[in-house]
Image 1 (cartoon, rainbow, N blue to C red):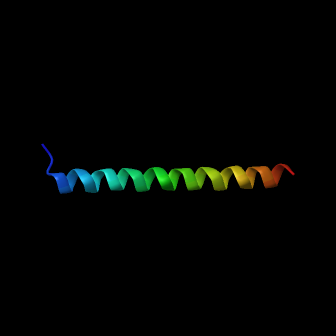
Image 2 (image 1 turned 120 degrees about the vertical axis):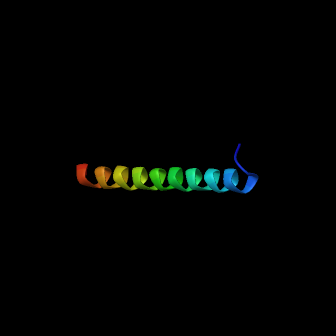
Length: 37
């Protein structure tokens, strides 16, 4: 069983990673959109 602090930190790390993925995805889409046009 994880301690509350460790679990919270882990959740935060996962959240930051998902935010990063969303940002990268959005940038890739905008670059792709720009390249097509």
